[in-house]
Image 1 (cartoon, rainbow, N blue to C red):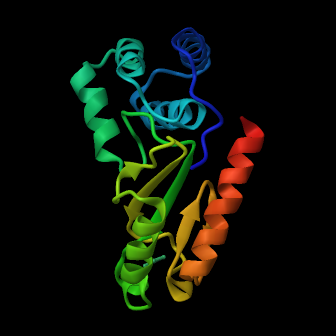
Image 2 (tube, rainbow, N blue to C red; image 1 turned 60 degrees about the vertical axis):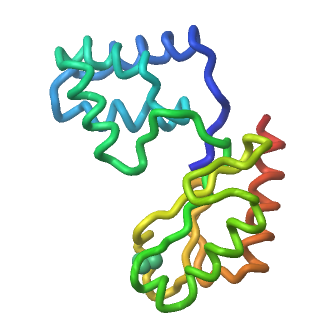
Length: 167
Ligand code: FES
């Protein structure tokens, strides 16, 4: 997922207040609220967990449990471009492991890490719903099929450029 920008605490609080005022605070709305925070801020901060728990009349532990249950929700900021490599079975059959090795070497990070410049976060994921066309990579909201190491490099360069243009 590509995040627009890191949001300052005051803006985060204002966004949370608006979001919570516009959303019914019933249990079935908890996940959409968390997803909305993630989409706008890039992660669900402890402050957001506290505010959401208060609004939904839940404990912080309950909200934190939901956040940590869903792999796509994060509690820490990551690079403004998230690169997800599918490491599930069908993609393994067509070389995702060697692509992962290439990606880690190219970016200089391990899985679950962010590049030193704070721009690109690399992580494994398990099935992007495009199994017949692996190896698959998601950058931002776009899923890319049959990704070779060369194509991976080109996609990351393009994503970095796009993120730089948004900054
Ligand atoms: S196994 Fe990779 S997209 Fe499904």
